[in-house]
Structure formats: structure tokens, C-alpha cells
Amino acid sequence: QLQLQESGPGLVKPSETLSLTCTVSGGSISSNNYYWGWIRQPPEKGLEWIGIIYYSGSTYYNPSLKSRLTISSDMSKNQISLKLSSVTAADTAVYYCTRGLLGASDYWGQGTLVTVSS
Amino acid sequence: QSALTQPPSASGSPGQSVTISCTGISSDVGNYNYVSWYQQHPGKAPKLMIFEVSKRPSGVPDRFSGSKSGDTAALTVSGLQAEDEADYYCSSYAGSNNYVFGTGTKVTVL
Image 1 (cartoon, rainbow over the protein chains, first blue to last red):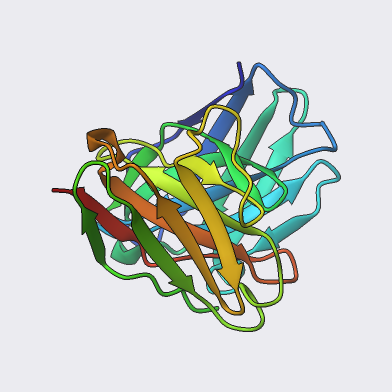
Image 2 (cartoon, one colour):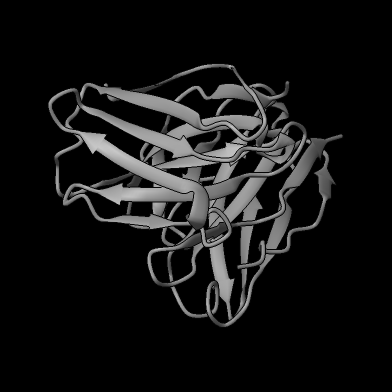
């Protein structure tokens, strides 16, 4: 059974960089059938698509976050990562790691809450 | 890219049907058949209910169905059950490997 587990600091200071890792078990991120991505949800608000990475390493980002965002993968560790720089309170959210197939996210991690505060 | 428009709330009695709309524009919902729907219970991660407009993943009851006409997609839940009470989000491919979510709809089972 595929499992995705997000990890990283739960508290980040304003202007610093938010860094999260998603460890995938029960499947390989190097499969060319899928893509992997991040989605976030501010408290009491809706879902926001952040970006995706393909097995080839190609990345695609939400235009509103593109200038601050880096998504990467480590095939040897079966992990994907997210880095969001110059964070503000507006970046406070639950961040989900997902697997994508046919335009949909069919597997989700449990999510991790990141709070931006001094 | 702007969020897809969903009604904030919808409701129905047990056994009834409820339909949730998801309105986009010609460059997202209207141009691609990559519309998906997610169910989210409080404190939980979203769960994929419908992909490619009307396909159900294995394990999703056939009470859930999806459709699309022009720039608007819809999710219908038939035979409402108490456990269907949740937030529902649509999502669409928006071209250039970008995706957009809907604003979300809270479904209440009366």
C-alpha cells in the first residue's frame, strides 16, 4: 500500500525558507506513470495547488508561487521536497504531498501544519 | 489562474440527491476532461472521488457521479448518507502543467 509522509519544521519565521520532505513508501517515485506534487490548505480555507515534479525531474509551479518555490526529488531516498522562500503569514497552511495520475491526485499524505510566525 | 467557483454549501436529507457545480472558464474546465473531485472530512486529508470528469476510483461508491457541460462540471451524490457530510472540492487541469482547485462546498446531510 502506497504511503506518503510529510515531515519538516512546524514553525518558520517570516522571511525565512520553509522546507518540507515527503517520504514515499510502498512504491517508487521513479515510475514514469505518475507525477508527485504539493498542495496546501490555509486554516479554515480551501485547497491550493502548489506544483508538481515528474520522474524526469521536470517541474511545474503555481504561477503565484513560482518565484519563491523549488520542488525537487531524491530517487535514492524515494523522497520529494519543497522549499518556499521569503515566507509570510499567508503561507501558514497544512501542506500535503500527493501522487498524481491522469490529472488527479490519487494518494495524499496526512498533511503537516506549517505556521509562519516570529 | 483563478479558483473555480463552487457554491459554499449544499444540503439534502438522507436518501436524497445533491448536486454540486464547479464553474471554470474555457481555458480550464471548458478545455480539458481532467476534472476531479475530492471529499474532505474535518481534520483529514482529501480523498479522490472522481477523476477525468466521471470516472470513479476503485472503492468509491457508485452513488457518486460526475459530469461536465461547457465550462461547468458537476458532482452528484445520490442516496445521501450521513457519512457523505463533508467538504467537496473540484479541480481542473488548466494547461501548461498547471492545475486549479474550486472554492469548496460544504455538504450537510439534514
